[in-house]
Image 1 (tube, rainbow, N blue to C red):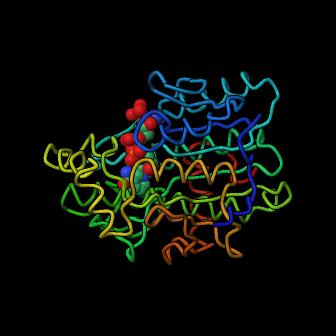
Image 2: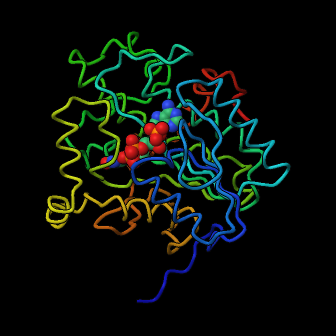
Amino acid sequence: MTPPTPATGPGDGGGATIVMTGGTSGFGTITARRLTHSGDTRLILGTRRAAPVGDPIPLDLTSLGSVRAFAASTLERLGGAQIDALVLNAGVILPDVTGRTADGFETTFAVNHLAHYLLLRLLSPALADHATVVLTSSGTHDPATGAGLATPRHADAELLAHPDRDPDLAQRPRTAGQHAYTASKLCAVLTARALSGHLDTGRRGLTVLAYDPGQVFGTGLANHLSPPLRTAWSLLGTPMLGRPLRRLNPVLNSRTAAGEALADLVLGRFATPPDGHSYAALRQGRLTWTAPSPLARSDELAGALWNDSARLVGFPTRD
Ligand SMILES: NC(=O)c1ccc[n+]([C@@H]2O[C@H](COP(=O)([O-])OP(=O)(O)OC[C@H]3O[C@@H](n4cnc5c(N)ncnc54)[C@H](OP(=O)(O)O)[C@@H]3O)[C@@H](O)[C@H]2O)c1
């Protein structure tokens, strides 16, 4: 098979500077290892704990103060060097929407979307021309893909940050928790869309991608869910059960495949996607370019989310 023409990105990663969240668990650890494989890539990892590879800087996405401190430390450590790729991969799913962050926002939305949005805004000026930004989304944002989770009803940042103000909030805590997760993943695609549409993005030649890794069992993502769900998640991630299941369902991917595909996106090791496509979905271990959900294709929603998120994190609506 002919190797794909690199679309963009730092190629073999040699000499590149990459900043990543979510590189300490699940498929993100595989991505982090792959990104540092060449030995001369500088990988700065935003972490809550020790990282097996890369250059760790403390980051707790449940606090916007921590995000600001992480961004400041990163810029200081870079000493003027530019960022070739920004990988926003960290995420959580919680059993309900009762959790609040230090800033008073619903935790899933705050970690998965708001904190990453702020980080993107803070680090954006340090992105090199032709840098790549990848936001990890999920097929669960799209009713057409599903995964048995409640799909997003909206991407209203105010209501997601304060679900108690949502008149249509699901009565069942578990459904409300699922909605918070899938809506936060819709926000990832909309953020990518909004950023892609900015004049400055085009002028700087940035590549902005949303990544759907498919369903990847055996990661830490189910850690906050009920014990039966946690056990099932972990068992389905074992090779004995995972392999045959992956043959039956194209949405299921191994941790290795999901982690390596994310690294490929970051390094530009993928064939140029069809015009206008920036949503990369991993199916049967292969990157495919497909349309995200109808809500995720709305420029109006993308613009509103961008501006409302800016207000929530205390940032100007445009750079
Ligand atoms: N697994 C799937 O089926 C699936 C499907 C679609 C999308 N995704 C998305 O893929 C990404 C990775 O998920 P995964 O399945 O690999 O899950 P995972 O093993 O739980 O990894 C999540 C990562 O996010 C980090 N993180 C979580 N909360 C954080 C916080 N408050 N501050 C800083 N870092 C935090 C974790 O750090 P710690 O190591 O400190 O916990 C970890 O590195 C997530 O965005 C997830 O939503 C996963």
